[in-house]
Image (cartoon, rainbow, N blue to C red; front, side, top):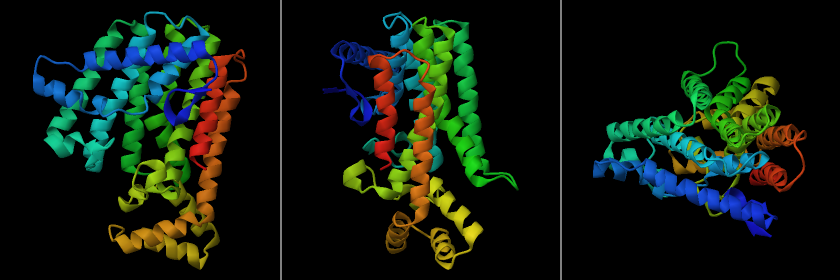
Amino acid sequence: MTVVGPFGLSVRDQALEADVQAGLTAVEEGLLEATKSEVPFITEAAQHLVRAGGKRFRPLLVMLAARFGDPYAPGVVPSAVVVELTHLATLYHDDVMDEAEVRRGVASANARWGNSVAVLTGDFLFARASHILADLGPEAVRVQAEAFERLVTGQILETAGPQDGRDPVDHYLDVLGGKTGSLVAVSCRFGAMMSGADETVVDVLTQYGERLGVAFQLADDVLDIASDSHESGKTPGTDLREGIATLPVLRLRERAARLGLAEDLALCELLDSDLTDDTRHAEALRLLRAHPALGQARRDTVRYAEEARSALAPLPDGPAKSALVELCDAVVHRAG
């Protein structure tokens, strides 16, 4: 058994592994080429997160989806570069909005060069992605534009919060569908499209990517509460400390409103306090880890991963389909 891609995805077919690895290597070269500028400072800023690494989750999905057509078609690798450039650009912007200091183990661009440079570098990456898209045809431009609109809409909805009377959990899941699901869905769509796969196959893989993307983010929500730093490589409770209400917190508040239990209400009050205080933060983490709301968030994650797996049913069996199924398993495993 060999391993490729994020989460230790195992690929049992040597030919598939070799092709996927070759494709990801070509994507890496494409990312470095696309982030070059005649201005050395722009190159440095644009390649800052490229060189910091990352899972390359979206390019991996492009490569696997392309196996349902001609995986060597000329548009496959460029479309993978497009989705990763778009993802990287959103990270530059996210870090400014979140005032993040670290990204992928290195200083964030905004911490290193300031917010203006970070925002403009993100814009530069969007421009380079658009330049590559122009050579992939009008349909690819349309698909990317629709996904980008959904991505931005999701970010705006998150910033604005749910409207009066809207279920906060439903609102949050809509946000994730836009912010994360849209670009993961496009990764699968581009791989199938560029490989010349049948339109039915393209639709199946797009639906799979949408659900997998939401499951992927929900698993991150659970990990932020449940994991230790050694296990996840991240500081646990980061979202808690920053006052970001992810799914475990929303499930807690939903339960507190429904049942009115004193311990639930007390934990909600603790979460609404200043969690930059290390003692309060540690106590909030301890209580949430033992709370049924975390188990509910895990079940939500499993549900989306199972929906992604079920979406694959119409596809022919083979190594690529098996790898896509294993990604569903890997997401569930991350959530415990």
